Image 1 (spheres, rainbow over the protein chains, first blue to last red):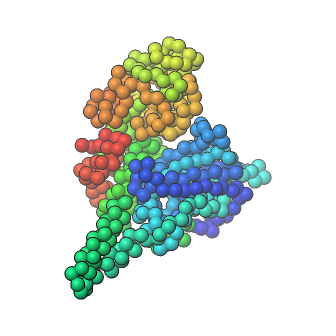
Image 2 (image 1 turned 90 degrees about the horizontal axis):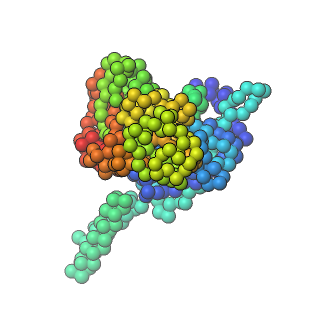
Image 3 (image 1 turned 120 degrees about the vertical axis):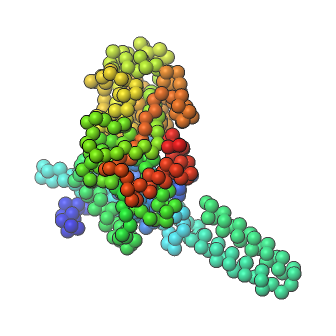
Length: 195
Length: 270
């Protein structure tokens, strides 16, 4: 199947770029908003990631170069939940920007490696008079790296270490201080889990 | 599209899944959905929460296409759930069951520069039926030129519900511009000062909502039953729902977290 598909889906000259960032304005958990722009007209795109995805916006908005909504340009997105990527079909003119959202299964930074998201675009090019679908290479979306990776796991390890000192404290003063640090560590873990 | 383009995109996603890791190759039940573009935003939110709350007990595959496509797909066994934003029709295939999951308000929308504040049923029928073609004939309109009508394509459940609730026996003006999704109607009216259309409440951002029969199109009025332009959202199954689909629908109807999700922009099941 792969060989058959690659025969039709070749690399093309289209270049795309975009950004992705966490948002708290959406309705989904661990939601991120992304925007993508390409230098040729596109008829579809896919977003893939090294994070498991659990949500995606089913309809997108396309903005023109004037910042206004580009009428008649939009994408409908489809995919699996959970998955490692989604596909969107529709149309967007060169230079315009598509905006939508996706959501990750876990909080963005709860992993051992930095999050990465790629966009791959679908274009149609004229090959000897025949409209032929072409697929771009994957382009990395810009994202602000996580300041701390696996923050919950690290906070839990710290909590366990700090709280273990309560029992081993030799003086009453040391025990009180350890208890205080333990409570703070427990609170920090709870806060991370809640977020 | 478009099955060819769709298959290219799915190839890319599948390739990414293979690269990303072996977790994709699991034996969990998969619930496949297709249909209404109005129901799809709610379905994705419910799927995300359900997967998390049942610790990955099930996987979802969500496609769109419009209510008629979802109903046809489920009746042919191509998907396990057809998403419909319209009520059952006598012309629907036999053996399918409409399971209501929520309700949704259809709002009449105009460009903010026009700002029509209220329309009664007679005005809606006159405008969308084509007997009133100029904004100067519409009380409260700030525009004066020809009315640009934006409606949905025939496969749309929103179109069907709009016809049933707002228009009755009045037929939509043949010169109306047909759009394939709520988002496209929203965009068209945002761009067109003389435009008017109707969309699901979740797609009214950037537009002016006209009150219908004197009642504003708000979530509160939809929930209270005061707003008249409310339709049901359904998960359509082949026969009564069973297995993973039955559990999911039960969760949507009864689980507090699910009801909270639905209450954000829709009228929950209860």
